[in-house]
Image 1 (tube, helix red, strand yellow):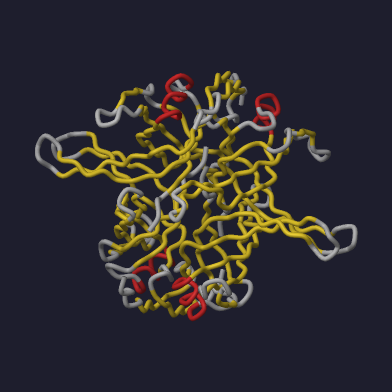
Image 2: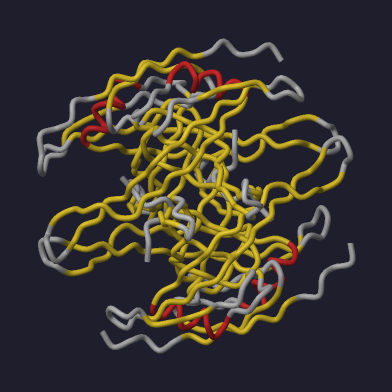
Length: 125
Length: 125
Length: 125
Length: 125
């Protein structure tokens, strides 16, 4: 079966934090994103908030590096990636589930502003 | 902003349960689906399990009706819909989050078997 | 970069045709699907047809086999897969582009009817 | 039925052109984007080009304005929106189909560089 992919259009909720993995020193950045849909209420004739989605995003390697230097709390972004569940046990020994999204691509949402882009030099492979 | 939509290809984890809403007697069916990705491991040259996603699905009205009569635990399905978070408070007064998916469409996955389809008569609108 | 994936919810426009590839005798089925969106017109207070999408779908191997035996013209389906362009030259020597979708999963849309599913025996791998 | 949405991660092929609609003076920008997937070839042990997708993108209103001032040929971007077909008749009176994507959101792909974002002042609504 396949990775479950999705695109989230929303706002950055928490400042990206980055670290290197202990195993192989890979850079990873994490932050939370929130998206709230808007729907037209036929009875009142007004747009109202619909469902919302909040999810933790991880970005790796060069994407992590550029996220860390480009993205701040409140920024409107579009994130494309895969979503999955992670099982864990909390302090009270309860089985818990969390949902995480690994980003394949992240960009500022040009609906909400202009962007100036500084392309990285291609890595020598 | 927009609904966050996704397609999940996986297996039915729990038998669909259905009920009618108290407010307006609408039929809703709920079940859980699990999807496990497979990836090719270059070092061993074998396919291995990757991330998995488990999520609760709700289906409404005619979709609920047909899900209840067509789908059983273990069935391979494809679900398309929107995902969102729901906030709640557990018995110990902790804030908790759960993720739910409202299905726009559900079908048996024809990768795994044949299907015979009995089309509903169109509702008189 | 990544495959561009999408889910199409629509109706089968043409009966699935199947053949075996000359290179390695793989089974492939092809058909066309059409999806027409509906949108609420605020001025008239009615639902009207919006954009539509028609695209050629290919399915391979076991999916092709089950599509060929399960799907007929007019059936409501959900298709998940990747979309890509194919370049070709027409009889008048013009460069042409067509869009094709390779299905990862296909199922009957349970919004529109009930289904009875006959699971294949797992292939001995 | 529903809009068919997709996310394209690729590069800008043509410079955005913008105009105002004659009917109501709405700003619209158009450009083409190309995405080429990469896949791992097990026989050679190397990554090779897979399928590619090229599609014309339209952006409206504020998104059009910011696209016009932020995006240039060759830029790596992520585009999320809906895809549909448009029917037309060519000079030789042949029925033709083209595929177009209306963008809901567009951003520079931070896999490939850093971005500086200048948020618009919210419009007085």
